[in-house]
Amino acid sequence: MLKLLVVADDFTGALDSGVQFASLGAAVKVVTHPQYDLTQTEGLDVLIFDAESRHKDSQTAYRIVHDFVKRVSDFGVEFVYKKTDSGLRGNIGAELAGAMDALGREEMAFVPAFPAMSRVTRDGVHYINGIPVAQSMFGSDPFEPVKSSYVHEIISSQTDKKGIYVYDAETDGDMVAIAGHLGHEGLRLTAGCAGFAGVLAHVLGYHGSPREVKGMPEKFVMLCGSVNPVTRAQMDYAGRFGFVYRALSPEQKLSPTWPGSPECSEAARRWLGEFGESHAILDANNPDETEATNEYIRTHSLTVEEVRLNISRAIAGAGKALMDEGLDARLMCVGGDTLLALMEAVGVHELVPLCEEELGVVLTSFSYGGKSYYIMTKSGGFGEPDLLVKLASK
Image (cartoon, rainbow, N blue to C red; front, top):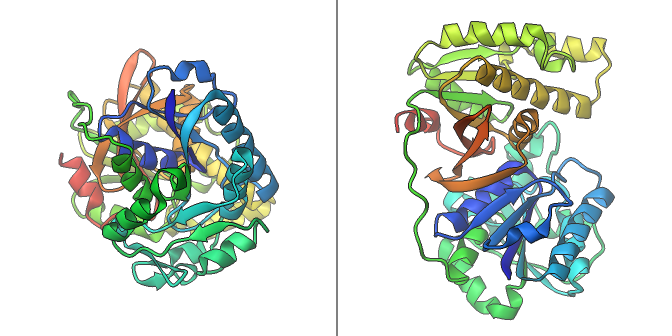
């Protein structure tokens, strides 16, 4: 019987959680299709479902989570973990309620902290690097801004469901103690980010080793669809160490017809020549073209949702074109939208997490065009300025 179901609201979150278990030897698969054939879980310990619900309205997010959890519960699963964003973006309250209703449970523990990444919860207030979350970079997220730093206030703005208990945690030891307090029965349905997922992996008895990874190309190419200032600092730092930087123009990243066009393929051939043997970054958000980007959005009357989708599909289309033109490199996708769009572009709907290259950076692999690719992922708000340089030098 499948031991654990994890439901995440975006792709990077799904992988962040999955690798906590895979790194301890558990058999893990990440899937994106809501009607995934559950008979294919034979031999799996952990199934991770990417609900892609962060950008949905709260009612839709509730229904997606509820229906998948109910289906897997009927199929037979011992534990369910609702993975949430460590910056508290998205439909957290609605999705916790969906999981509770699907299992018929009246109580649920929510541990939003990730102390290793300086995300802690104190007296019900969530902090990012010591700053209340609504005053941090997550409060100014262009798509899903966090408007309150009080976790209960965020939850109650999305659901009137009672019985969601928010636990403070400032250290890994705090989270281990919470797991011990909850016990086997209390752990049957819990929620949090990748931090508490790591604790859960140990509590559920996984103590093995990750798969050995061999034969990765030396060249490193990053596909960036994030506007997070943490990622911007990482790209600036990498530029000082010789990374080739190229960015999509406003027309390329915002036109829905550019991905897959002859112009996209031509650009990919040009970029490959310009990259040479160097590590490289392909960015969808050049800050020097902010004014031109805003003018294109106004001229074409694009909505915020259209901008988000067009950007993720454009950077994914560029990545596919690079592979079609013969790119031989380790890839990195920053941002869940970017990764999902790339997987859709190349027709891949399942991934197997392999290991964590650095904290918050998950390595996985997939096949496309008869060739195997290794791809690293992270969310936009993670990591020190030298992260890309460290990853490329491995």
